[in-house]
Structure formats: structure tokens, C-alpha cells
Amino acid sequence: MAEGSLDYLKEHLDELERAGTALHPRTLESAQHARARFDGRDVINLASNNYLGLAAHPRMKEAAARAAAEFGAGSGAVRTIAGTMSLHTELERRFAAFKGADAAIMFQAGFTANSGTVAAILTKEDVIVSDQLNHASIIDGARLSKAEIKVFPHKDAAAADALLEESKAPGRHQLLITDGVFSMDGDIAPLPALVEVAEKHGAVMMIDDAHASGVLGKNGRGTVEHFGVHGRVDIQVGTLSKAIGVLGGFIAGPQHLIDWLVNRGRPFLFSTSAPPAVAAACIEALNILEESPELVERLWDRTRFFKQGLTELGFDTGQSETPITPVIAGEETKAVELSRLLWEEGVFTPAIVFPTVAKGSARVRTIVTAEHTEDDLKEALEAFERVGRKLGLI
Ligand code: PMP
Image (cartoon, rainbow, N blue to C red):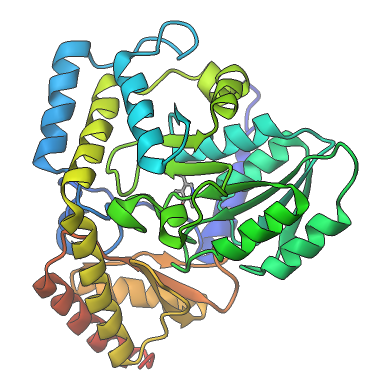
């Protein structure tokens, strides 16, 4: 090992520290609940993606424990060698039915579902037309595919139309791709307009429903169900890590797409499959979603309550339409201070700053879950009011 060979990283880290953008994740010392213990402090937790409170739901814990007892802690192999367990295939059947698709395939994360799929279905001859605010995993997949990447302004279907038109060529495949719910702003993609554009150009339509599965549509079936555009989206991505409460990602679509990903989806081929407890808990989550529509209703009920509270106080909550509600502070330092003062008041809302969001639109991001009570949210709103006044935000 050459002495000092990695010292340049220290310099980069120092730069991040000086800019105030270095990350120092807090440590969760309890289960992931609406009130949880982070770094030794009990706080109202507005920071998780545990939309339905399934991460530590008693039935989920039981399902995971049962599967671990029967099938062990790990799967022991990649899917294509010896790591396809009956729990994986059962979960895939269930997820395909949940999404109204022919078939589905599980990946180890939502991230690899996106990146592995985009990379597997396009080549350097092809083009990907992608919303400006799409998730990093889509961007990485696009880069891996070597396809030409064309980015349209956020939610601008007419601009997507123009990009598809200008990049048309015989034999060239085109992919139009969007997040269903955007993770930093909480707004919803204009899916009906995008679907029309994709159909007009014969492009493949793909939607990343990481923040919409378990949140939008009947029983949380996602954006396709929310807009009633069944059969018009080729590829639906879901994550098992957010509303479903566990870990993993999904692609739902036609059987030949799924068969192709079994053969060419690199994370599927070259990375060990999910442990049995993960798959079993995900199956239980789908059972709970199907049996208990009131969970999703409660999520929306609490979301409306909290959003209304923030709006009445006079906060800028941007374009949010979902349980993700940003509270926009503007300058980076203001957002960091807002997050810090809320933390001192016992409310955990992380600051989100450049480069994750544009300069001047730094914010704290709040996520309400079905587990929050109105009392939790009232208490959080009181803290927002005190801190907001102190910082001159309201
Ligand atoms: N897509 C979007 C829009 C996301 O927000 C995330 C999670 N940050 C992912 C994909 C990746 O999902 P996972 O956490 O399951 O890897």
C-alpha cells in the first residue's frame, strides 16, 4: 500500500465539511416508528419512508421470524444458481397481481431494480428521455446502458414529446421514464400525458413507483391505478423498502421483459438474493395491504391534517401532493438551522440541500406515516410554529 495514496479523499471530505454538506447520519436506536429514538433522543420521526408503519408491524416481525426459523438467515446463492427460494417466487407472483402485470421480478433493492433494468433493456444505439428530477438509480442505469440521455424539464410532457421526436431513428429504441412520486418535492408525475406521448412515438413507458407503491391508488397499487392508465405503462418499478416496510425492489411488466431480466439483469445475476425473512415479510405486507385498505386511508388522512397545519402557519410547502411535504427555507444555512432547531424541539426532519435540490430551495423534508397520531402531528406543528417564527420563515 503506497503511503498516503488515499489522502486526496481527506481533502475532498474537508471541502464537504467546509461547505456544510458532509453527511453524518443519525443512528436509530429503536424500531422505526412514528416516535423513535435517534442518537439517544426520543423524537417525533418525520424522516422515514415507513409510510404505513409496516417496518415494525407485529405481523411483519412474526412473518420474518417464522421464515428465518424455517428457511434460515440467508439464501446462500444468487438467484440464477441456487438462490431462488419458493418465497421469492411466491412474492413475485403476488407482486405481479398487485400491480396488474403479467409477471414480476425481485431485485435486492429499488436502486438495483431501476439501474439493472434500464441498463439491461437499452444499448448505446438507443435513447432515454428522462424527467429532470428522476432518481439517481435511473440516472446510473441510463449511464450504464450507454444510451443517449435526454433530460426534459420537470413534468413537461410536451418537452418529452419534442425530445422523442428529434431523437427518432429507424431501429432505435426509445425509453420514456419518470418517477411516479418525486422524492424531494412530493409531487406526482403527469402520467396520462406521458403515456400518450410514449404511445405516439412507440416508446417504452417506464415508471418508478418507489414512493407511490403502498401510497397512491386503491390499496396502494401505485400511480397507474391512481390515474387509471392500466395496460398503458410497460414497466412498473416498485420498492419493498418504503411503504412495504422491508427491503428490495421490483419490476412488474410483460413476461418476456421479466425473462429478459432473468438473463440480463446484472444485479439479479451477480448478487445474492434476499434472505427468506425479507421475502416472507414482504408477502405479509401485501396481505396486510389487501386486507386493510384503512391503512392507506389513514396515511392520507394524517397527510391532509399535517399539510393543512403547515399551510395555515404560512410555510412554503412547494408543489407537494403526497405524504412527502417539503418545508422550503431557501438558503442552505437556513434549512440546516431549521432542521437543527426542530431536532432540539424533539422533531426529526432532515435538511435537504444542494446538490440534492436546486440552490436556493433548501428545505427540510417531512414524511407523515399512518402511524402518526393527530397528537404527534399537533406537537410537531407547534414546534414548526416556534422555530418558523424564530427564523422568520412565517
Ligand atoms: N427510486 C426512488 C424515487 C427513490 O426515492 C428510491 C429510494 N431513495 C429508490 C428508487 C431506491 O429504492 P431502494 O431504497 O429500495 O433502493
